Image (tube, rainbow, N blue to C red):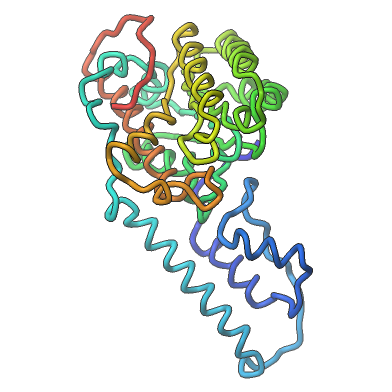
Length: 335
């Protein structure tokens, strides 16, 4: 388990600059291929620290090529920082069309525990549990994965609150592997909110959607038995690698929704939200999915986090207004 908080720009800037300065003249074929295929996609566990190597003092004029690499690395860092600041200025993050009223009554009571803690001014712990799209594969920096985006939004909204968002995403996993670390990385943390992203790798691995749903239901039961945490399931993403398996993807989405309904937990219908981006808001798929046809990019993660954060904030507002919602109305739908 790893706890990601937004990294400072200075620390993140150091890695690409150091890498450019220390790059060897020749690369192995495997290394060269890795650099060519994914130069900007970080590993799920975050960027490795730059190696510390002592070299003789040398004039920069002796290495014009390396100086050029360093300049390009600096330019790239500046561009990424700029894109983070205005990520929605080019394409706004809008809720699914036609959802302003539909499902709003259910949304109001979806996250009572975490909302109550925020209203009371008590510390809040959120665990983002899942695979590579929780870890943030495809984002240009750890700053821009969805848990860090969500943490930033909530801290801006509640500047005096003590809010911790733990990133417990491990690339390549699905329900069978996640269940093995559920106790240590979720239950033992005593979270106020668990956001459980699951099902995508099961579709890609041709696992039985029914088996996945059963494991997720068992996991929800364990979380609920251990405390009062709110739970939000996140179903698979709408992306080419997933939609090329329509039967399996459709079953997975349907079954996870059914589990959420039966266990009275939230569901973020990511598949339908992303499909709405493409089919109703006319956003090209490549505008929110990276070239691997699977993982989201900075904009995709940012909009996902924004919609989820908006509903947490809305839940807080409803509690402050004294709105009473029946205890069994818990199904989360982004508005």
